[in-house]
Length: 96
Length: 486
Image 1: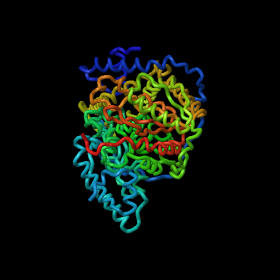
Image 2 (image 1 turned 90 degrees about the vertical axis):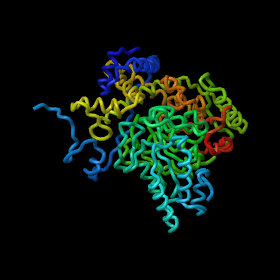
Image 3 (image 1 turned 180 degrees about the vertical axis):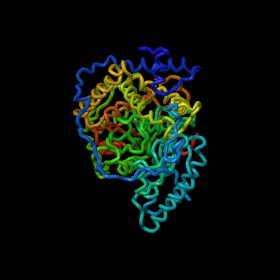
Image 4 (image 1 turned 90 degrees about the horizontal axis):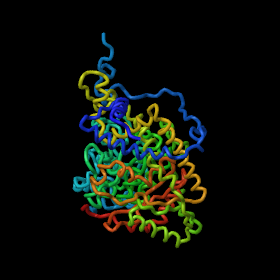
């Protein structure tokens, strides 16, 4: 199958990515090449695979329910792009 | 002082344990080698001389006082830039994590430090481990030490080139679809993709969580066995970690040639003639020693690249959604609006190949396409697993070339994503099935470029791979690495 520019822009929006307008044609060409390549799997017969095969019950992996020390506030501050008084700073999302 | 950098892993270990030289002597020799030659290879994104010498000095002290942490104390190890080391930049060769200093160690790193290994980060890679040539790094292209006009393979190309160029005796990489084995093959060294779940992924920046696995690269088999025995074993912090103890090196035993059943593949047009020749001569040698060769039908596995790309990109679109400019990494805030912050931080922070894979993953997970692509790929993956189970009911090991070609030229495949993806055509199915496989050098082509053999075993049977690799070590030792870099 082939995607058109509109569909690619929709996927980009869902991915929180913006494709530079000057790159869009190249991106679309490459993307469609890849899509046509992976399209071969639509011809594979997978009817023999059951849901049990797909989600085998291997049990859960659980840890003891014990409180442990996590990262300190100063460690978080050291890698956060913007951090104030113990909070990550984000742009205003609610208009007052 | 002897040029210690020339020594292979096993000689380094011997020399340190006999007291022939100290960890500091060794670190200084490797540093001078890196300083002299890495400008031609570009294996490392950055490295801190002081911290390497400090760790080596501490190890020297421990050895002097008769209290080494282990027989490995003082052995230097290169680390790929997607494995977290506390207070060290872990950028995944990306712009978006350019200044990210990890606040914690990956479990594999903790285990290496507990045994006294000296860490040499940050080996270059394809951005977020996405690529087959180390040309997708946001910073630099790593070159193949055999021919600097060529690529070292990817995505652990920095780790592989660092070992091949004698900057480090052993290194850590990560393998999602062949990213340890393919560069090991193109750089003439050993590289292991362990059974999924045997090495903790805690602290490995995720690309595709159900496929990723940390693995060692080394010039000799002992380096692989030792590092794997140190980093493997159950980790409470990784829910996919198998409930097994660390690998016991005493389990490695040479296998009996007579009656050894080896699965082989039919040579297709995708395999370069020199690669096919090296592979077939090895098979003939094995047969003459009493091994039984059994033809396997790999027709289903030929679909593994499309299956791999759908599953891997779906997981990558989810894993990389955490890079949003809010909590860590690069932040671009052009208009003061939250959506713009996300979009601009990600669009400027991720390279083109990463963006292409995020888009493909978002596409295959989106409503309307999920059943046809992602759902179907998951079912096809089950068939691949069953296919391997079928093979291993008939054979002990499967042998294939690791890569269909030897190292290609820088820039040769960058304009065509499909050609680049096909570099991993023989390795991806191993990750889909979760079984272990290792690349071993078996020869060179007419240009003197290395050729690797992929040895695949049933899950949790790394011992068979290592035993077999030891049996063919004479063959592997025919591949001489260049002493000087062209």
